[in-house]
Length: 154
Image (spheres, rainbow, N blue to C red):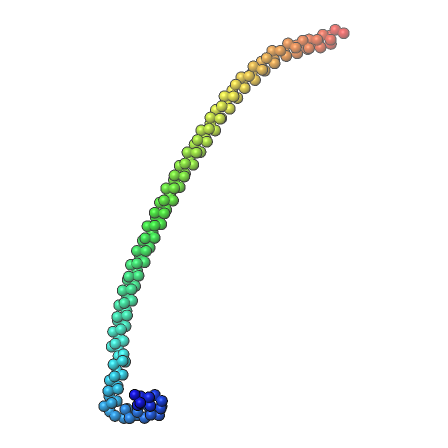
């Protein structure tokens, strides 16, 4: 432990130890082998690249499938909503048509009543005109007769 403390505190001692270790061929080889275990080779990188590419393709396929399923789900929900709205509109439209038909029936009934009243009124007007003529024609003839008598007999 004292040796470790010494190397921690003294940077020159650490450098000297490194020089000694590097100068020994067997120690240097052991260090290189230890470091190489942690270094990635081209083959390691190619393998990792291939695995990464496969993982991305799997993820892409899964996402495509999920996306298609989600789109299909949304499509079905939209279709159901659209059908529901259509049915509601049909029901409301039919109700509105029924209300309009009832109003038209009432208007036709009122028009029929007005036509009957007009027919009775026309009949009364004809009678009134006949009575008017019946009373006033003799009076007019009498007035004309009196005026003619006054003109021809001074």
